[in-house]
Image 1: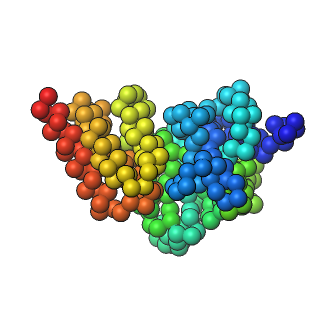
Image 2: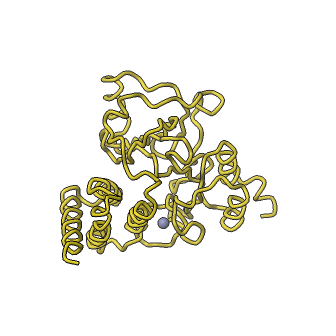
Image 3: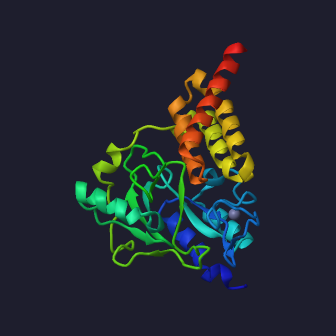
Length: 287
Ligand SMILES: [Zn+2]
């Protein structure tokens, strides 16, 4: 493994992003199709942060080459991931072809015109379309634009080139859309229109961190306890509503998207979050 550092495509990809001012983090990899985290029912195989390296997940994403070298010397097989949003000045539209993402995109393009030429990454089941961060947050969404289309912006991340999917396929720049072949385009207006232009700005410190932490803990909760965990998260976060640090919509949107990524049903999730917030708010009113 003596040469692994210099020729490790995962590390090189991370370093290249960092040189361009884009924050990266290592995420788990797969061995024989299974996530290296060793969780039997890992909800996000070969795609989620490594607690030993980034205890606060994407919040620990960095452009520091020293830190990046240290991460990949600890875990040379770690997949590189790119933090999206203001920290990297990049917003990513994630097309999942297995979930009908290309059909959804074709419909939107028929309605609004084609997407501008920009940088794209080929993933295991679709593409990541990179856009310049538009200056306002585009909320992380799952399926809001149609099945199989997800938006990744502030607080989110995407697995990036050099990574290997658990299927064995590698993430690569799309031909004709590599950096150098395409410039980072602005996202088209219609991607904004469907968005809530605000979310939890980084400045709201503790409340935002608490929200991010609850979002992150959800996938680490055993499957049978997720609904309960979701309720607890909403309950705990409700106290930030009274201080104005978060709105009910902030909490709902973040937890809802996190739950949706885990496959919890929409209706149940919405009810669970609402009841958690209600209980949390009335607990505060009583104190
Ligand atoms: Zn895992």
